[in-house]
Length: 333
Ligand SMILES: NC(=O)c1ccc[n+]([C@@H]2O[C@H](COP(=O)([O-])OP(=O)(O)OC[C@H]3O[C@@H](n4cnc5c(N)ncnc54)[C@H](O)[C@@H]3O)[C@@H](O)[C@H]2O)c1
Image 1 (tube, rainbow, N blue to C red):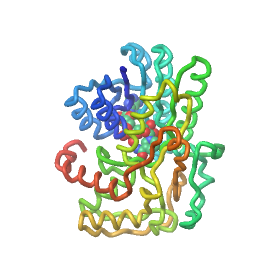
Image 2: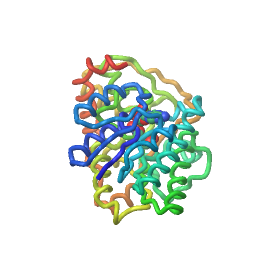
Image 3: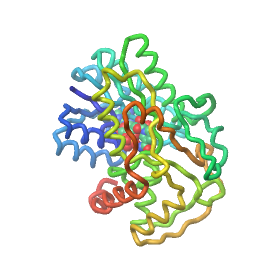
Image 4: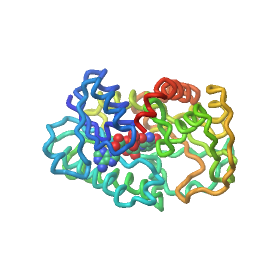
């Protein structure tokens, strides 16, 4: 099976590419290397004989000229929620026009598509305050999606809908994974890549931080999914795609992989033996949400899959990777 991974030099894309290469799939990637750290991942891909096409996802003329693929795994996005407030055209073009171009290529190739969507498709009004520990709502495929959700979230939802339209009109087989927070090795500890690796990196480097928003107490909560758990799931999905397709799944971590910021601080202190200072900043961006938890019922039932890694495994794996690559990484930033 010939597979193209768009956004293949990003955190998720490179991890999936390396994982699937080991399973003997023919893998190529498309990435314009706009994300800092992309060159680090490109080096890894090259070492593993995976070719990257440096193409902008908005450039359909170039995409059209690529060889024929059986499956495209679409991991290409401007993935930082906050960026979407200020760089409107960039987010709209990469995330939505990009999906359109991927779909046009899928249509020409008579290929299938697996799309990485986001939990940010749910409207912001659903997340007013942090619920009590015993009253946490988990989100799934049936939840309301009507309402403002950030421009990033809009482009992800619009992409989901576009995929359904193409599937209906052109009989394209698809799978959509609506993911919550993903973390693990190949996240470089940068703010716009997610809070887990940022927390570890700043502890590792003794950099003070702030608890921002919702009173500044650090009580925000997320379930986190280890990138290896996601790679295993995608592998199962590919193997079954002729039988199980045209479905949308909520994909996230578990209760065991969930954490508050305060809890994450404790785990990082224990691992790094560093104790950094935290400022309290009560207010946050209008795009910020205080919690998110995934209801994995449908995905677990369909693929007999569940996230294996708990929050300690996730932090530990990311910590070890950052520690071992610390010197190397600074060269790429
Ligand atoms: N990381 C998470 O926690 C998370 C959670 C939910 C969903 N997702 C989704 O998973 C996918 C991958 O996310 P990620 O964390 O790996 O992000 P990432 O930023 O690490 O990777 C995205 C890649 O896309 C590339 N790219 C951006 N604009 C491009 C363009 N115009 N043309 C070609 N390439 C371009 C970047 O260079 C980068 O390598 C995204 O669709 C994201 O929305 C990620």
